[in-house]
Image (tube, rainbow, N blue to C red; front, side, top):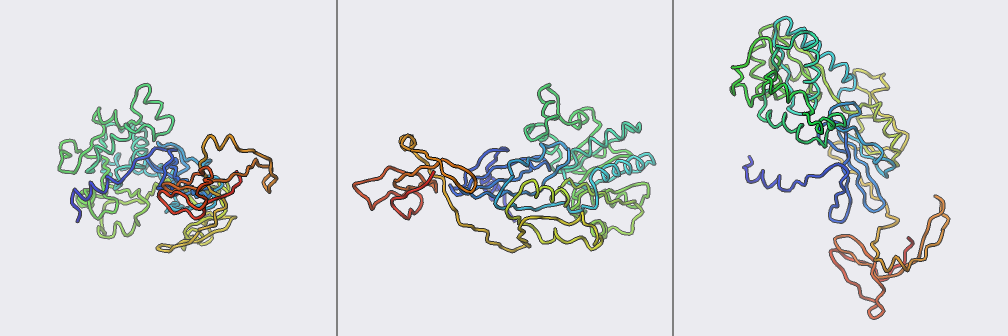
Length: 403
């Protein structure tokens, strides 16, 4: 559908930013990305328009993994909190499912079977590989090969070692030794881990039974995982472990049933759950929370589980798929740029307000705007009814304001 030129044009519009880097969008809003703790590059955002603050929490995690931990302090005290992407399977705890995956893998390879793990090429696989290596070594199974099959396997395994700034402190420290932050880098060199773009790309040369294979796509509707599942489905010594939470277990396996191959659903979803999200709302203290209405209803299979329902003690605006909500509020003040000469002329006086005493001053001038950034120029006595305009319309010539 799309040719390479169209794709290149699309990617050319992407502006990479670092954590805590302030991004000005057309002079209208300032955006700051913060570590979300979910995966490499995942971010939450603080969006400011003057004195109006919006905190946006998307895919985030409070678990300890390979990424920088979630930043919460900078999200605090917003006018609006946008909350989305909570855990899709909150009944499953990641630590428990991770242990279950290791147990299934160990028992399967001990019995001489192969293990197929349909998954994405990045994300939780980086932590899972390290856990599996430790578990296999502990059970004297260090000769079992681990094979990763993906069109982007090479890049997906190399990038985590390159982008050290996105990793947690422990893994960043290894870069200064110098040492590669992930075990898989050294295990690839020692040929304990093998990676291929597809099953026909030399996998036959290293394949032996038993083995552990990570392959896509986790939906089992395309990719090399489908080929391997068809090949191994008639042997009950083999096992398929589904770890991606966004795909339904019965629906994913339906086209392949019945099959002798054993199957397990062990979703490793690091996303924050409902209990963690409810605590975040208390810690962040927003005036309004905007989120999905489904978060306030317990699953049909667990109607009495209060820990599977979001709790909020502040105003909630429910926003469903495809819906629009107007959260615009009157702005009580704007930030205006002053010159050094104007700052010297300010006569700051204490003023008692509801929030205590503040220093204020009265100043007059011509309001100008360029790229949506207002500045205050000196009064023009020769042309009291005229003002200069750059980038936007200015209504009003002279202003008085408190600072």
